Image (cartoon, rainbow, N blue to C red):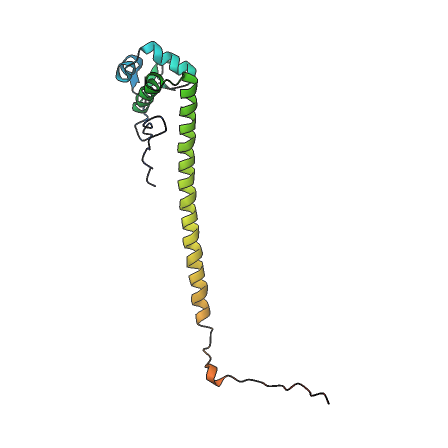
Length: 152
């Protein structure tokens, strides 16, 4: 199934959900890539805005998707004036929309398959009936006439 292209949200470009989700960046590199301070990343993690993976020792590891999300959080906060609670809600709603789009795509695919199966079944039924039908020439049809009794 083809993944839908990310569409811009009402407040700007949406996070590309197709970015790699493998947690590889330590917090200092992630902070540098996102243009934020490491302490800001820690506070975003505590607030639930970004949920980085964890290394065996418990250290945070950020993926490319996490970096893109951090940049979007920064943009919404700094350029759009959205508070962190609002940003968290936006992220939750965008995730819900993505999940619903996936479910809709799956349901559409199932519906298409069901329609194709129903069409094949109907064609099979129609094909089986055609052997049993006998063509009738309407010019040779027999009409039985029964007169109604007259009242005198």
